[in-house]
Image (cartoon, rainbow, N blue to C red; front, side, top):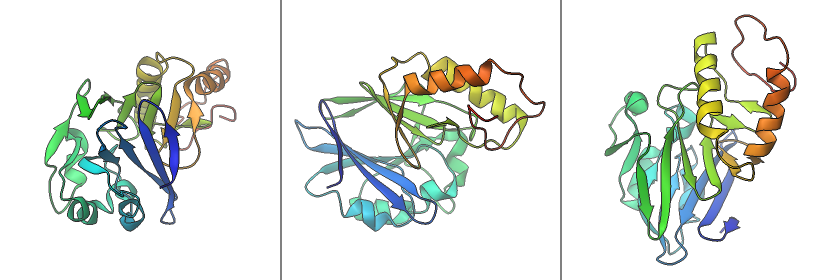
Length: 214
């Protein structure tokens, strides 16, 4: 398996899924072997091949954009398990519907590992992050160098609020595992954001924003 972290939880990262370069993750309890899958991009066979003897209990979706849910059907068939997403993004699962809904503050128990659900709207209305210990799965909410893409200035303002009020309160050494690309930390993101916040902001800013360039 592509082991990414081993400690109080075991995390496997499967990168480069489809041309969209999605990351898929498997979070496993080291004590019980129970696991959850985070996101279901296209080429789900890459994730399914890494399950091994893990006992998958659920599939968790960070948000409802097509590149993160393209493999939902195959993932559900391959694991026989249910899928959860926030209600504000559930309409994207067409055809089909979620098996359960995820809400801000929910706790998902994976053996002895607790995974907290954090609702971070902005990139999409139902965007979620998942936190266990000092490991944060950020979906497309937060990347190295900036926030996720936003469709209008109102969504960008909402995403900034989500990041600063819900993610930047986490310890600086929290590791951030995004839905695409490499990792970062909350401390690094806060330092980059401080540069962005110190400068005048262009009116109507949205889209792809980089902390150090926008």
